[in-house]
Length: 257
Image (cartoon, rainbow, N blue to C red):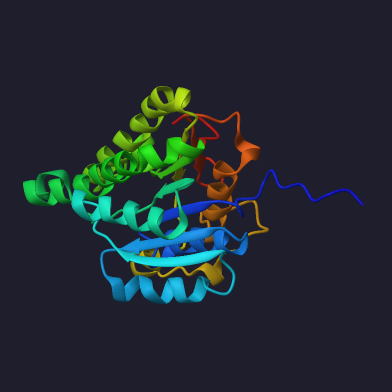
């Protein structure tokens, strides 16, 4: 019998997943843990991320919960240091932490604009820069979470769309700069995903989504986790600097207006 194909596995890796207390981040952490990876999960409140790490303990190679505000450079440095101290290095960084609120452009205060950009764009900058040296030591990967809002805009989410557009551009630029360090940087741009936030806003839960159905425009957190795992695995070795759009059936006009 031939040996199992491990190209799609992240089981020998140590991964940091930001914004992992629920939704997509939690699903990514669970996916990596089931593969046997060491998983470091973080969010702004220790009490929100401790249960996630406890749930991963039986499946992960190791699980660590760290309180970290990605907008705080000192906290981010401490996150990376804790990861290296516990597991000896960093193989994958998943920049998932994000936030948004809906408002017309004229109603977004300067503080509101800065807050959303700070979490979504500066948070990605802080974490990636802090983990850069550790990632380069072993030829690691960075997977950024953006949004279709960063590709084509979204009404009443101009601040969020602008920040995610920055993440997409950062992905391609950094992928070029870090390629000679052996670090691959890629990005995922999800459309509507049945996360707790979407459930609160739209009333749609993951149980309402049939993963086998092709004709749909709502995905699950697990489907985004599947893509993340692929981008972190050796199977995606020739994918560098790309943004994978995961939004279901495309919006195509059948006839001209």
